[in-house]
View 1 (tube, helix red, strand yellow):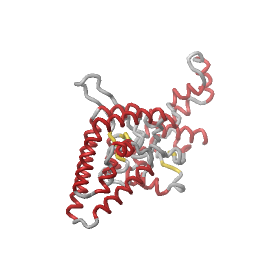
View 2 (cartoon, protein in one colour):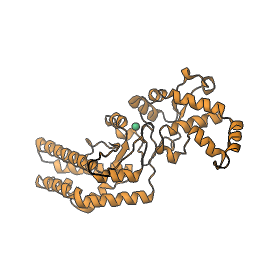
View 3 (cartoon, protein in one colour):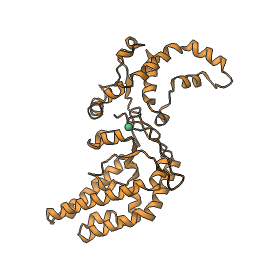
View 4 (cartoon, protein in one colour):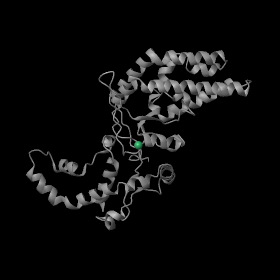
Length: 320
Ligand SMILES: [Zn+2]
C-alpha cells in the first residue's frame, strides 16, 4: 500500500544523525566491519575488502544520502566483487558472497536493536509511514532498562539481500509500517519513489474520487484512484499491482464520506459564523477549517495518517 510521502530532513536533523552514526561507527560498527574486511582480504577478495577497510570509508557508506549515491556505491561494489572473483572457483565465490550477506545481516540486526537506531528515528521524527500514509510509526525510547522500546520497521530501500553493503546505510533505511515493509520486500526498488528525495506530491500524483458530484453524500459509491494515470502510467500501475493501492484506500470510504459531509455542512457561511463566535481562540478562518477537516500541508504529511488523501479530496471539492 504505497503512496510515497517525502521525509523532509533539515540540515540540523542530518547533522545530528551524522553525529550519532559517527559515534556508532567508532564504538561498534567499525570493529565488526574491520573483521569482515580482513576475512575478505585473507580470501584474496582484495578490491571488495578495500571498500570497507577504514573508518572513514565506513562512515561514508553509512551516510550515503541520495538514491544515486547509494546506487553508485552498489555498482562499484558489484564491480569490485566481479574482479575479485576472476580466476576463483564458483564455490569460493558463492561462499564469500554468502559470508558478506550473513555478516551484514547480523550487523543490521544488531544495529537496529541498539539505542542508536532509536535515537536516529527520534531525530527523523517520521510519525506516519511514508509509504502508505495510513499507519503511525512512533518511536518510543525506554526510560528505564526494563521498559520495552518501540520503533517502526526499517524498510531497506535497496534490499539487503541484493545490496548487503548498504544494510546499515542510514538513508537506505526507511522507517515504515510492517505491512509496507513486507509488501515492498519482494519488489524491485528502482520502481519505487525514494522517500528521502521523492514523493507523489512532487510528481503531481494525487487521489481523486471519480464523479465526485455523483458520489457526494452517497457512502456506497465511493471509489478512489491515483491520477493522472496518463502521465505516470508505469509508476501507478506498479504501485497498484504490488500494493493494491486503490483497494486499500477504498476501505477508508467511511472517512472520505465524513469529509464529504463536513464539506457540505461547513460551507463558507457556516465557517464564517463559527469563526465569529470563537474569534478569540482562532487566529483565522483557515485555522477553523484545519480543525474541522484535519488537513495538513505537504511538509507535515508524515505527522498524520491519511493527510495526503485529505488534502487531495479537499482540493478536488474546492475545484468541483
Ligand atoms: Zn505503511
